[in-house]
Image (tube, rainbow, N blue to C red; front, side, top):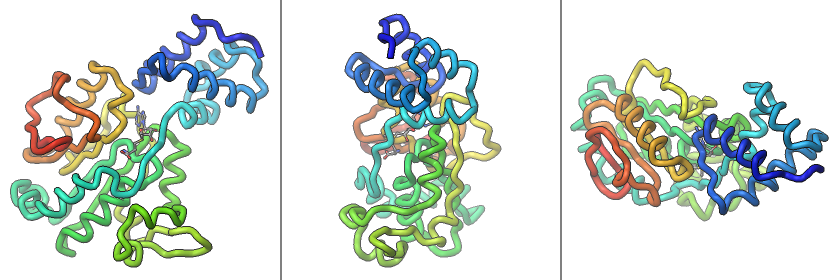
Length: 269
Ligand SMILES: C[S@@+](CC[C@H](N)C(=O)[O-])C[C@H]1O[C@@H](n2cnc3c(N)ncnc32)[C@H](O)[C@@H]1O
């Protein structure tokens, strides 16, 4: 394999930034090189230029999707940052009462905007199913830029270790244990629509979302990208709709519309 020069490495970094919004810093460069090497080996490509050009001329093809799957980080878990789910559970009455849309339509619309392998939207579905009366329909859109991870999410099959994350009562109620794997129930699965979607694109939705979860992805974006994204979210929240971000993320330094702080990592339009 030929050597990876600084200028070609820069081109890959730009490609990632311009298409995914992800700003890799110096600490990520070794990881990037290792991932590029793995992908090139798989395709029998020895030259970084050649691989770069192949990617440039094959966007929206499997080789491009595979590149995205490899570059993105998918770490997640059920009930990650549990404080937010406790907040929803404890405040469900006021959340539904101050957002007229939910009671008028008897439905709650939620977007899990970087859902990874599905643990986040399945957690939201379980929490809302437990907290809301049966007549309120829960509709969740779960999206991610990585097509590979969306396919995994759609399957809803998880290793036995998730019994460390999900309470026994919920495991019993919403999963089936078979051959050492937990399968999410159809009741929960049917609340969710999975889609591949890049947050850098314009949002193609007709309706607003009562809750938007965008957790642990903005950390990979720079301030201007974060700011654009939060303003796009703002436009798709109704009055009193909620935005949930990751606990290590903050809107403090970014220029955003009039979102109000509710509690750490939760904001309201
Ligand atoms: C670390 S995971 C976080 C998953 C989940 N939200 C959580 O907090 O556990 C970040 C996810 O963001 C996705 N992602 C990265 N860039 C994205 C983009 N531009 N558009 C949509 N999803 C993106 C990745 O594919 C990955 O699955």
